[in-house]
Length: 146
Image (cartoon, rainbow, N blue to C red; front, side, top):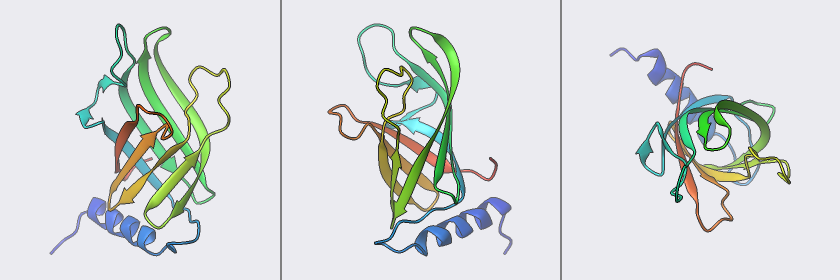
């Protein structure tokens, strides 16, 4: 039986996650590609709003061993048009849970807030702005390429 490079990568990725202590923080090296938002495949609107809305075309999330999380998102914002945004934040992993901490947003219009979620096998689900009443769930899948 032959395993493809992708399956081997996913096995290594799952093993790395499984080896972390359930109580202590951990970091990994991984690349994720956004598959859907709240179950809707891309491209899709970010949230249900009256009138024009933001459309997400693609997004990637790269986690490194130093605890950095780099998010790149290609979107069409209702007021500024089509743009690609990149933000660098920090993250910690405890067991299967991940928390991505953002800098205080203040008046920055494209600020990515705090995100929390779960990593299971090759999937990463993140709740965007988890303290909001209107949560948005980004559903990522692990990818071989950065």
